[in-house]
Amino acid sequence: MNSNKPFGFHSRVKSFGFAIQGIATFFKTQHNAWIHAAAAVIVIVFGIILNVNNTEWCLLIISIAMVMLTEMLNTSVEFLTDLISPGL
Image (cartoon, rainbow, N blue to C red; front, side, top):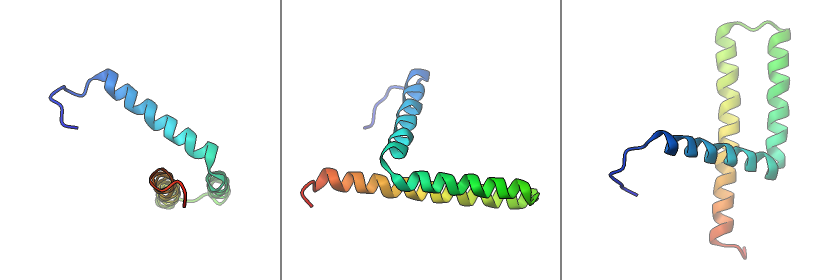
């Protein structure tokens, strides 16, 4: 995948399009994604109600992002496994 072409604006926009498509596929195909998203919304609402400080907001956002990222990575591994071994 080494190419001498510089990574231009069009390629960067195309990369973001692929990323958005992947996130959309994640939410379309994974029931747990909606559960995690709902839990994240509940955490944010309670954070507003309980008036958490800036440090706590940072920790909450990092935790939410880590859970969603881990679920996305798990989904990608499952998709790859299904692609490699479709009969299992």
